[in-house]
Image 1: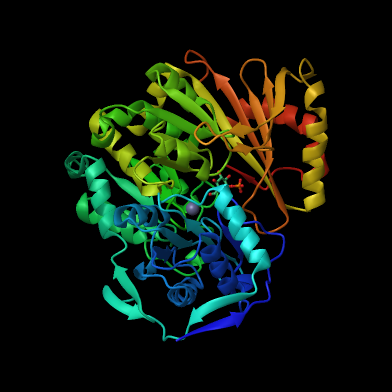
Image 2: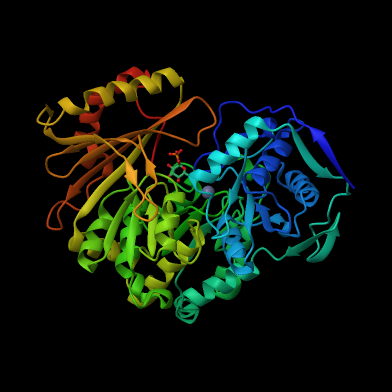
Length: 542
Ligand code: G1P
Ligand code: ZN
């Protein structure tokens, strides 16, 4: 039995953007709210009739309840089949893989990524299309439009499904298949990488710590690193997904992964450290005494990918989001492959990957991935690093030194001013936008502006245009500052200031990042009038 409920659209100004709809959990829990959004998704994609969807999430608070609602709405809308991860769990990259492997029509992924979870924290839902990647803007716009004009949703009157048992059942005529969330993903990783070589590395005494941050990668990392590759038991810490991620931010950066960072900076550091975020798509890489910036990690992976079985034939090209450092461009140049610069957000890589123009891609925000799925993939990056370490037989710090000597070093940092009043953040942006044309030739401390613009992008595959993607100020000598407003925050506005400064391979390669970036930080502070934020310093530096 299905019923049709009248819907009063409790949507405000949020347009499902880069990461679907992300809101406070209590907002999602309002009667009818989730229902409306799910119905809007089905309406926007031409209905659910006869379709197969993959559904799973990162296990945060409200994950299980939301999945029950999604199943009933899918059934009432005539979906033929839904495949769900056991316990409602699927990491984002594993969901992307399942959609592709099963030839499903799409997927609904429940996560607010690295944002905290809990009844007073964040929740999110996004729709992925049949290539396994986030819905492109044309579809998110349609979802937004149908949400705004929605007058009803359909929901099956059925009892809650049992998601604890692997197997098949039926909900109001729709087939429900509950699968092990790790099996297919682990099999894919074993195809891409030389597991024997990595096994030998661990058997030879190589030590590692992986911080799953109480989030979804715990079961994946335990199975792959400890059970299949023979890493010592206890290698994976915080391995049990919890609804509030142990009360922390499941964000793999030196600030939030401080437990791992302090071990890696101590004299009892293992050979290699890594962490992943709430839904398993981000990664952090750290060696004994040395944090690897995500931009550098992407560059090292691109330079060494041919050492892993999946990439022995070389890479077709690389893509990075605009705020990501130019380190990977230098590698692309040496390899003779195309570098692409895209707006922030993984969805912009989808067309390039589908068209075979790029093999690897990444973002400064700890996202790295390849054409094996259509999402960034935290554990994939960790395994590629392990494969490279096993092949090269050198330590991580030695590999980084060699990389910087060969390509030079792009010192890099991101300064976030969080939860600013929206008008303040918008004023900083509009004042700088207005000044861009006057900046070239002007000097600020030791730095002189060489160019300044606002980033626009034309997708080389489908020619779709994206404007206002960040304000860029370039300085003579290779430094750059970028300003943009976050599209994923759930409180006020977050202003991101991205800093980079280049040192050639025969220069000072081991400076403290904050020292190397001090001139560009001071220059952009003056240029953009960052004093207007009313903050003495950024809230988070990564
Ligand atoms: C942030 C990151 C961006 C990433 C997105 C989704 O978006 O900066 O690189 O793609 O999260 O994980 P932002 O809040 O900056 O809009
Ligand atoms: Zn994430």
